[in-house]
Image: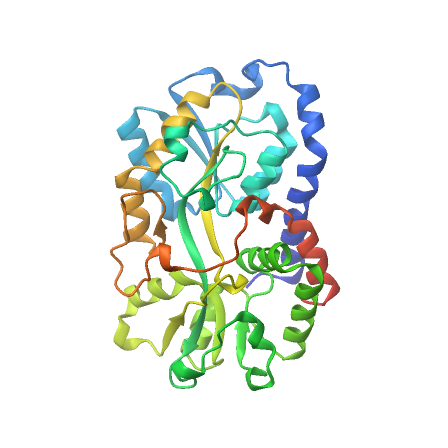
Length: 356
């Protein structure tokens, strides 16, 4: 479990992403002479080389990126790290960054780079593979896999008929002390940001205040929330859908004491966020576009669906995971996922209500 100083350091890094996105566009413009990045970019001028900054775990995507090398002939140099930290690094580096492709865990980090004017517009043929709701509003980044926020519930403690129809019902007295969540986790921050964007600042603050007063159980990560609910430590929990399917794959459905509840309509508790990619402006654009098309191809999309139980986002590829609702049946707020970049305001709000 992370120490309190470590958690605070991560929160400062997350806030820096949003703050830098506001300050750096002008600075980047002043420093960019329209060239290909020069020597500062290392391999940036080589069309067969690509530096990937990956916020996705090495254990998860390393095999996929090896396949990218094999299938495209590109020489790929991957630098792994936390999505928010890598986004902050790219923003700080500006047009001197060695990154050619940013592989982000969430739409908000890509939105921050888009706002800073650091991403190339992607070809329409690539964008057309993915529904507009799962790509950036400026056509400079695209989602490659999706995940839905869900309510996990312990089947011994909660009957299906008694499940909440909205995340806003979790402030009811009947759920006092019975809901698990991970307040310092990035996916919870994205959910709160989606609530702020779609429902407004006041309604979000009121919900957070009432939710905290309802004595929810605090965990460090989504996986711990999942395990806590399955063990009966809590009746309900807020997680991303694939954590439950990952557990089912590991232990078998007959060993689980929990199920998932997908909230309906435009509820922010049904947010579908994405892992996505953006090509940095500079000499690696051609290689970056090749990588984007590979990640939207059938092999890569099938990899996400089968290995992580995430949603494939490219048209023509569907998930084979048993029990996973079809992507086009899911709800969630109607919003540009780039707006999840307003993370700094979310962190200030969470701090104000005493959650972080």
